[in-house]
Length: 322
Length: 297
Image 1 (cartoon, rainbow over the protein chains, first blue to last red):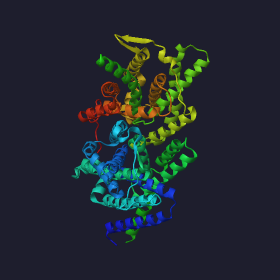
Image 2: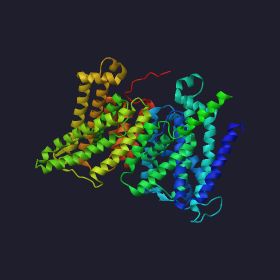
Image 3: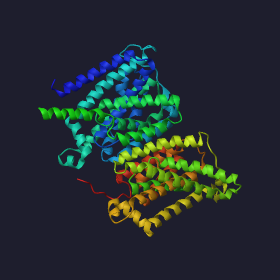
Image 4: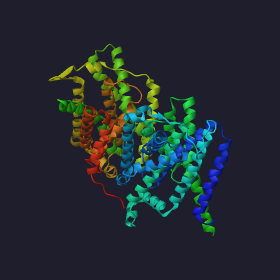
């Protein structure tokens, strides 16, 4: 097994199978929680891809909402019911909506990039709140989807959506890993280090960032669509800046070294959130804020660095011996 | 007539906005931190004003004293919270990536959000006494509350004071030197870390002052901070981060754009602010008053 792409794909298939088997054993609430963690993690995975090229989007709520509303509207008005079609439709819609902004945003870095993406998401929020046809600030409900032509019973709905989420995330996380290890993906890392040098080597930095942005939008749209299907409801808050803030939170917690870490971080945050909502609803943000500060202070490169550094060290030792 | 209404509404809104954005842009200029928690200090200022005005009333002071109470509230917030935040929290993270510092202040925003709820509770406060203090102003058939015009005066005073302080005093010149390059200022014998604390305190004072001035016009309740952050960001990005003239022009642009939208097309209120921002950025990608920066190779 010396082909790295084949090895990554094998790992992806292994992860899907393992998660599916785990899903069979999970109680209902944990299934729902995991589905949420996966779909939100998808959005954060997009931010991680952008972080690899040195920019952080503080407005991924924009694509999250775009994907969510696209799926919800497709289900409501176009008569599309299939969960997979709706999810992919959400992802495509978000990518299409993000496309015109990509060349504009790729001119900016750092704080400006973060604040402009935030502005875009808040404009969408403003539009959604005022739009009567889409339920205004209350949003609207979405009925349960079907899966590959078959009806889903209320009993099996949680597992069915979990399965869809697992398969999609397995495929997309594998694709992201392969993309990250490709020439383009490694150029992104180089941009993070020093973009002027990359420009001198003859690579278009803004093009690389624009491509990453659209890919991140696709992932975010899928995450939004999955969330809508699992919750059965959509509202403008999807695009609010504090929603985007949580996605960035997860991305920072995960770091940009490992795709697995993103979903681990997302799961941790989802669990902490639902437990603190239950036991201390008034200090939930306080806990999150302190948590974020501790991570930035003591684990600046994220959860992923815990094992990725060790892997890299082992690989280096092996090469020295060989 | 409509044009006059839009102009007055716009300028009143812009003055309030200018006070908030001035603090934000000053903190960015000196500390190079884009402070998301700026809105939280604004909210704390509003709450503190509500408490101070109520406290003055229990002391038996006439309502005419309430502006003093509001000013004291802003000073108290700046004197207590700002050094605590700058010395206790931000100092740990200096020298890290700018975006990471934004996240640190985001964490601070989350923390302060809950802390204000814990201290003042979820029920709204009303401080309407000062609002009536300045009577009404008549413009032909239009009638305005005098308090709104007082706001314009305060904003102009703040702007002039900061301009004078920076350009005509010794401390101000030192602050300008730190804004330009903290390393060189430090090697010239400036105590940069004290300037940081001082500038942060002053920025927070402006945020708290704007909050205190708003308290009589709204019901002071949770959620006050969130909207302010977003709008004042738009202002400083239009004007160029760290620029005082920029904050003034940016506030005017945003204020007028918003007033125009409110009176002609109310659905587009939030939208109008960002359209104004987008138009400016298309022509001046770094904002109106941003200096060109050298890039490191």
